[in-house]
Image (tube, rainbow, N blue to C red; front, top):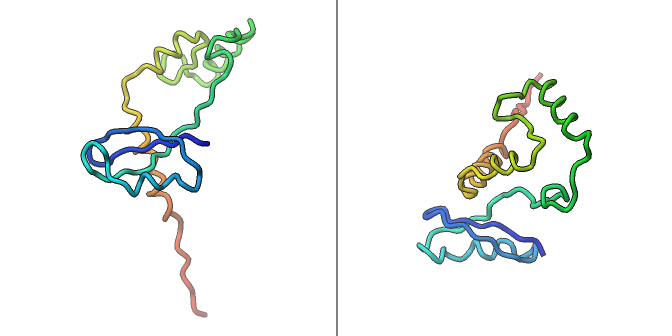
Length: 126
């Protein structure tokens, strides 16, 4: 069963719950347990894990060279977008204190805003 992220629109409390696909909106019909506010389903990134991140395997020796070439070619060195070959450097960047609720809410709001985009077709009479 998938794990879904939910959040309260009023107090910002966030929680996740495992539910069947058909039942994913059931919790949205209930009030928040903290403040009684409206619960919404949050759009989040899928949880993907590779063997290098969890420390099961080590990257090959050529990995550092490839990463440095990517940074040079894309002119990412000394920017916040620089790709780090060392996992310890990556983890430092991932530890930044940003509320996952805020990020997921921004993604959700952007997706809602884009639903109606596009040019409206108008009929022309000839």
